[in-house]
Length: 88
Image: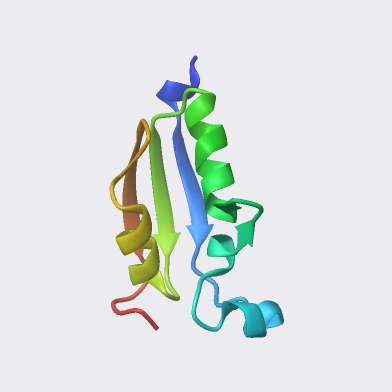
C-alpha cells in the first residue's frame, strides 16, 4: 500500500502547561523553529512522502488550528474533530 492509502491523525488537543509562558496565546505546535512553525515541518514531511489526508483532533485553541491551517495544506486534505466547541 501507498502513503496515499493511509489516513493520518494528529492529536493537538492539549493546553501545554509546561510551556505556559510560550504558549499562552498560541498552540505549542505553532511555535517557530527557524523559518516555520513546528506543525508545518510535520505537514511538509507528510506531503512530501505522499500522504493525502490528515485529521486533527483539536481541543484547546482549536479555532487557531482551523483558521491557520484550513482544509487544504499543499496536497493534503485536512479535516478536524473538535473535542468541544469554542477556542478555550
